[in-house]
Length: 450
Image (cartoon, rainbow, N blue to C red; front, side, top):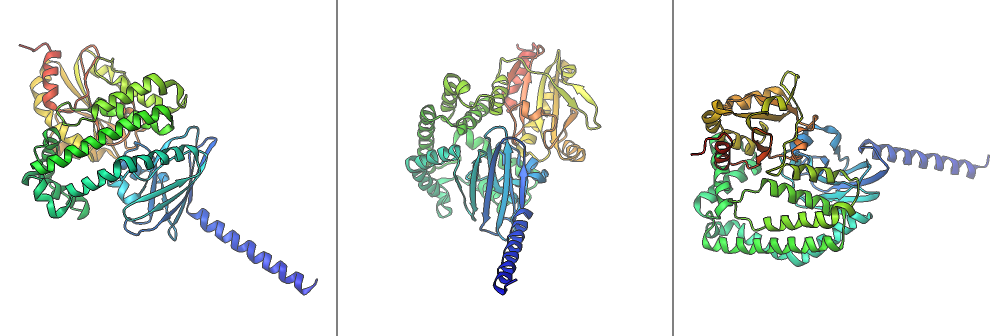
């Protein structure tokens, strides 16, 4: 064999070895998830060390705590690179976040992709996530985002930055709200764990401010009303755009609208609610039949709509902490019942549940019950929270991944929990989480009105 031939063979062997090593390194941090004909290949760069080296890629509306418990949704960046392949039957919306942020519930919203047949490139920076895709649905969303940035968000960000300028905070916020903002920021920025009393105070201040904007000074209120106006203009634009340019993302926005309508507190000062009604009209008149037939998001939207007041409540099985199955119908038929979806890790859920304790005590002997369903990693977490908060009713257990589908059938795919009040015949009376709104309805359903 000639010397030149031998050299060429050796070089080819070396090249093949290097390719194999490269592929091995690439595959060592490449995960595949799901099954189906669609394949979305994700190639990412982690360009910050601020949040560790793990990335979460989870379906939209999944709860951060559930994400944290499911390692199949996480991929590790090696030398700043990560790879993830999503297979599926339908194009779905996914959120991409550094794991540390996702597990803390701090989703920024800019890391969004649609899992179509496409190659997606992602770059994660300290303060932003940039997504580029060669897929049609992702490009549609990118065009819409670009239009909205020019028309609305550039102006919105200027005003929002002015309102949140630390050097001017006393100009825009009254002392009580200013304290609550600083306290809540410290929980995340300084990794500070608040006492339950402080957490309760902060949540109360924020809730009161959401209702009447009284935490603003006149100067702060002026800017906030401008921000509200821009949000309304943006929603009107987006609804009209979807009517002319149907896309998968429209269905997810409609789901969000249905969820917001169901949970909207009319005492809150938010003009955006009327646009949520327009989303639902767009869906019923055009997109429900035409857009992505068979897509599971249609079933999710239907779940939400079924939970509006006046609709019959659907029955299902519950699981006790020791694994026994109990039909919920056996608990609530003939009763005025509050179904309480809560969790030890959900501060808002616990706040609402605690507010119901005196109402439960007042009416428990007159036919009113509470059926609590905790979404937890383990039984002990539920029991400790119940003991600490002083709940007077038993609680059933739902695994953190919503294994039995109890939370999803209530349209709760993320955090926040839910209340559903039903009468003796199983008709939904309210989905409000406010005790002050529920008590009059409970009295009326029990026949105690004077």
